[in-house]
Length: 368
Image (cartoon, rainbow, N blue to C red; front, side, top):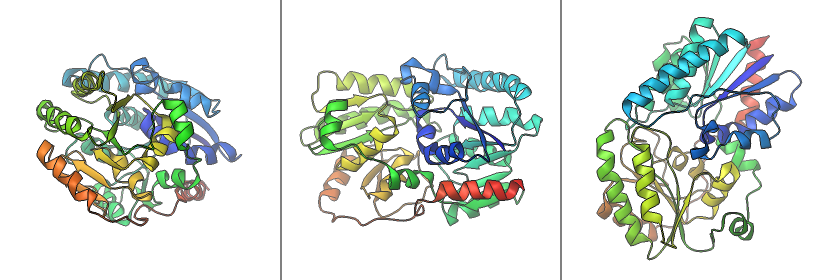
């Protein structure tokens, strides 16, 4: 069975890893990676090299890079990605193409596949993020898909509502839990040697992505967040991973980089890679930001998360999540609340770490 896997960024590739490893090792499958988006951007870490480091041999590279992060540039990028994939799908056939998540570039690649009647399997379908336009892209991808793989029963019900039974929906749990169960975490000493960051210090791990529904508000949001960082750095080391290529993402990046210059307590990282990022999460004190990893991966350890703003609004709120406005006073108030909270126990909301094997089994059963 010939299977293609679409990956447009470091974020989705890291989640895919346990599934890719199973597909690669199973003689039943002929696996091809289809890499595009920020994987080919030197400004975003040129993460195509990470894919190669994992030993995948058949990798298609499709250049769909953005000129900028304005609404017009992103709209043009969607059109350009559709055009590039129109040519690609015309020359390459698959029994199944797997995609993950809710990014606009993923939507463009999948929508271009629809006239070719390519079977699509959508991973992490059924979720909701009301503060991002990605919410519409996710559900659109689901409507183009034959199979939907969801991470909880709640998301299964939502996915079924979206597609109205036009696709088969399976609750397989989250692939990230597979990663976390099997990962060889980087220890404190090695992490310091590799990234020059001492995680034995009290550390906040932060990622802030622009809110793409109300994107003009991001200017005030980043000011409030940086104001809170400037106070929190008196007590914590703050490790900041830079945001996605969304509308106003470059503004957020530039403000964070400018703030972090010459401040010893602020550590800015373009990309840790999957193992590095999860190791940082394991060793940090808590998370602060609006990334989806604060909902899935953080629940495994578990780590407390201060979730700011509306980008992730609509996701399941497990007991490790504390939500607040993007406001310096509110953020500091939540940090003080965390100091009084007791240690959490493992939350198994997103499964027990067998998602990859379940997906493989379902694919085989439905290909017979």
